[in-house]
Image (cartoon, rainbow, N blue to C red; front, top):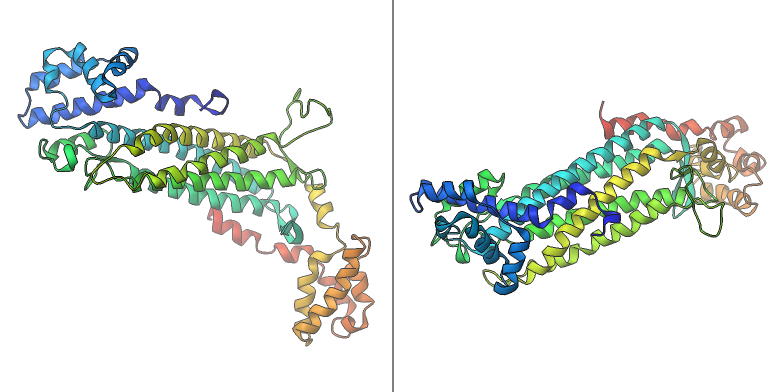
Length: 433
């Protein structure tokens, strides 16, 4: 990924230096296990740890000739280790190194992403409690529906990202497997004990049947999980973008001193961060399809997946890491305008209470069809007057309505608190306690 949308810790995980270091550790741990089994001399295993080094530029130079990255690495390693290097990679295949390394990288990437989600959850929770009882209008189809609170909007986001975290933990567990099983995965030339030793040393579990490569359904699930998280990022970003619209302006991204919103219009304060998050989410979701297509490899192995993973592994994790961090900043500094929320809530002359009137009429003995008709005919007058009329006034003046509902009862039915009486219950469900 380009530096503009990257953070150093995740980028470092995918750098050649980090990748070759993991390769070295896999080979060295395998040598230890082989030495314990008596397959290679213990002095050889010791020599690998003591003299084992690699040089990225030298590996690249060798690969230009060999056209094989693992062989280039092993050749460079041998240049440092000396004669004992002939015992390195005993009974192993390139996939044993490549796939196990990728598992380590993806597991470590997941750890970073889990920490990112934790930071986002903390920010959302703090702001949710800050605005737990702040009334705002709930919208369906973009149209005013019934009252909610801004805290409940954020509580919904918290619950969603909490599910994302749980999925990511499971995806990490599923991807963190080790395969050191040799050609076509039969262990013919390497003992399964070697795989078990390397797995433990690298913080992985053993792959039950690796067929020379780790099955790519695991990777597909990992990237699918990243795609779902990206969808949740976009969902919250889109909410902020809508709330920042001039006609709404119930919340907006923090606008820093000296920040410029437009090269042409000095008055502009645009939701650039959340628009950026929408674009980044599209990228992360775009990596899911190639990962799914990697599942169908030929027989015990092919390398059609390799070029895909070399790109989507770094790109998907780096992009999502940046997106989660950016979204955390947006929520942490989000500017919220409760007065505007209340003004918008009251904009349509009390139409938001229509369902409660409908239900009260049915409770008072009117049929549901008649109740709906009575409320709707008055509500449409308010709608067409763009909120300049009040629904309560029209209902009071409608004899068919007051036949069932006295004026005093009608007034009680327009109580805003009625809609928010279970906010504490929902918060307890989401946050516990």
